[in-house]
Length: 67
Image 1 (cartoon, rainbow, N blue to C red):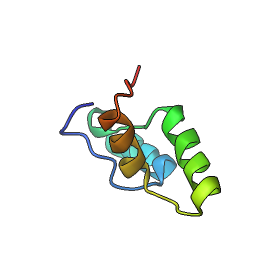
Image 2: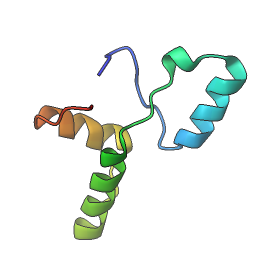
Image 3: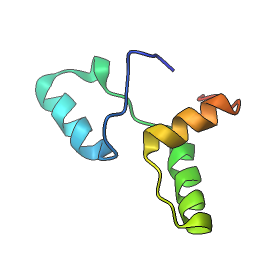
Image 4: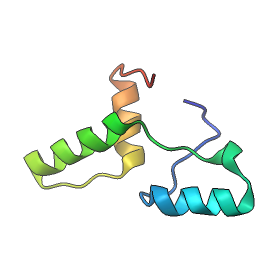
């Protein structure tokens, strides 16, 4: 994961359209689908909804490889 790229919001679709409008795809980061699945599983098990950025960072720290 490139450290310069940050997911600043959970609204990935809005960020995508903003990047499309501004032609700034270089800075767009869309999390792997696994991040969405893990976040949903955590929310269903605990009732806590973490940000996509938090879940992705946690997964990477635990050894998950985004491929």
